[in-house]
Length: 238
Image (cartoon, rainbow, N blue to C red; front, top):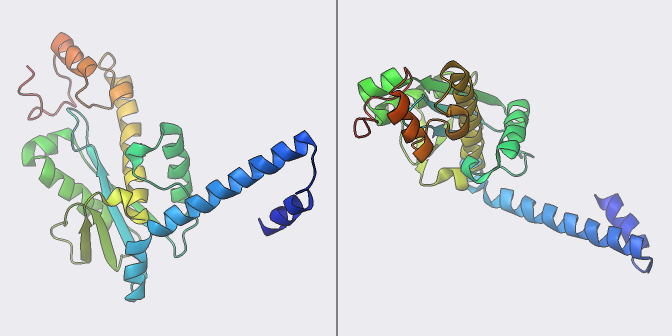
């Protein structure tokens, strides 16, 4: 970057239109890059707080799929390296599908550890969605190949986990570790729902991923329930 800046400065006084456009585009890209670095720095305050306390392996925990009418709830646990260089991490809901998929691959490549926990529709109906979410989170934490020193969790405190935890409201927008976990959980669940779309065609699972859209409700009224619908969630519909 420094060498490129020096090269651009050499053409600072060049009046050719093509050179001026290239210089302005480069300066715009540099400004956007620096702004993103600042955003990631601000998103790392919780991780820095715990590293200053001596904690090395800081796990971020988040889930996807608490609200849908069908399919599983998926939780992810991610431990990122110190000075993580993954840019554009954010709440998975704010990202495009293409960007989520790109970050999913990058997180899996660069993270110290990644794990997911999945609880299916039957278990959700049996123990309720909150308890099922806790179970998925517990499985995700236990599945990490490296035991975390502490956990940053989106909004909740996970029961039956003997590790220091900090619940953070809207944590996927405030912590890079939770943001990374939200992306892993979301992409993993979306892949599951794409597979279910092949198994149960006609319900539109590839499109709405099981959420209660008008189209989904219309298909339920037309075709009835399929195996993966959460019976406790659709009682008011049929």
